[in-house]
Length: 406
Ligand code: PLP
Image 1 (tube, rainbow, N blue to C red):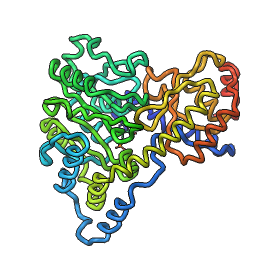
Image 2 (tube, rainbow, N blue to C red):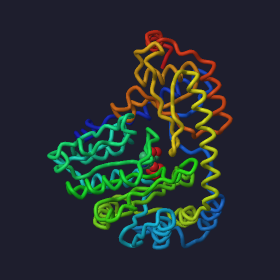
Image 3 (cartoon, protein in one colour):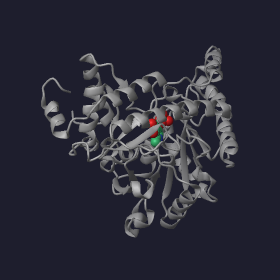
Image 4 (cartoon, rainbow, N blue to C red):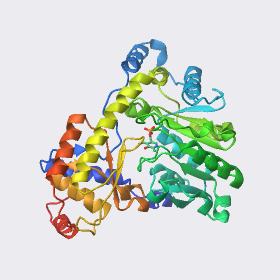
């Protein structure tokens, strides 16, 4: 019995390994505050839960739900894009509901990539952009996201021969892990680039409604003509605190969505119908609910910025997303890797953050801290940071060699 070679090219998911460290720390009696995952801790709107409960009791809602989502859900997604972004979508041709957006990212890669094909992938970035290409047997060309460019890629720096041989370009704004945002003029450049080199632009936008102050994140589909060359992924996971419900959407190019549906219809059999009906309720969530929820994240992020400062880490409160992306300063003993720093923080303070290297080599030197724990726990995490003096990296490394350490 031998799994395919593709699997040996697929590195283990770093967060799975990290979860083992956290579990070991908990077994040693540490009260761990988990700020390593972007997993919303607050509940969805009450109306969404009510709709799920009510519709799940109906006897006719339990069969196979159909491959492209119920028409009412597709219409609700199109209506959301109309109201939120002033983008006009055809519900039957330009909208595909997903079982969470992650499967859509991977299945789109399977639709567009195979051996000999190339995907342009941001570094650092959300792992499935790379993992989808590996699963499809394709090659990856990484495009760096650097602080000095506001974590926007320099598309002009991609050699023309590389750009012309690529099938997909992945972008993600508001960005995980950096918290960076892109304005419409950058998205417009990306659409021009996709048209010029003839590739599919995939814009992943699950944090479009997790924004702070007066900032409103744009959709790539607001760029005139974008639906010819782009698909956008979105999700109720962060928009409406529904990560466990697994409802997302792909919208945009009808040609790309029909390829995606061809893959999906061979793999899954749709979303449980009561979830689709609850998703319709979620898509019409009152903007004031979203603003109130975002104010909670904003307060937590401010608490964390303060706490990190006392560790010598400078992080800017982001305009959007759930994350702080903080550079590990050389001054604190130097010699840290993002993982050795995060491990020391976990062992010494019980606060779990994500090492930046989990998001690709470009994330080395950073940690990502997520505002998805109850505010009282975030306050406690910030206090633990204030009480902690990081040792120099060499001392921490010795502690890691200690058999008692994880
Ligand atoms: N895209 C990005 C950038 C994410 O950060 C995440 C989840 O953290 C997803 C997609 C996946 O979201 P979903 O829960 O819809 O699969």
